[in-house]
Image (cartoon, rainbow, N blue to C red; front, side, top):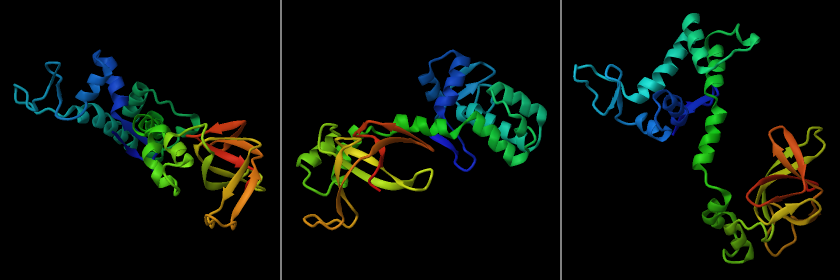
Length: 252
């Protein structure tokens, strides 16, 4: 489970806070995650965890998610927005946020975005969610195969896609044409569903208007290069097995 804001580039999951408080309370991280969700409370007077919202003295307790997760976030956000330098500096030091020189002059929402994204970066949470919840290509293609391939599901191509077989027939879907840095050519970017695509291979390309049995919008071209695309950077590699995305040079 994750919470956050895409607009301001920050977010968090229970994992992050569970790690912080597991070290503080000297308990297992998995147990701490359980305590941070649901009807769990911490009685700070008696230093005990409880499922009772009302203490023996009649004091009403906050849920641990509110007490240990939401309250610190709200407290820091208010300190930033209200310009409370003392409170802000104290909390930023405790969570390890250090501002650059050019960021120290920011105020209000602009400063809040910098502080929160530095403390609870959205990229880290998205990556965590992907690792924990997205199935691997080998798992996903077992049930995605029928949606990916229009031919017989039990033929060599259909079976290779379902099994994500790197030794099966080459099957790749090009989803986007990405311009090169000099704007002179395009990388054909897509995912390899079966087989292994390599530099120098001659491939059969079926365009969007291709009709099985006809030769319209059907081409055969050699792959000049296969590239790994990482944001703005590209790295030339000899081959790419199924289950991965790739950029192709020479087929645009």
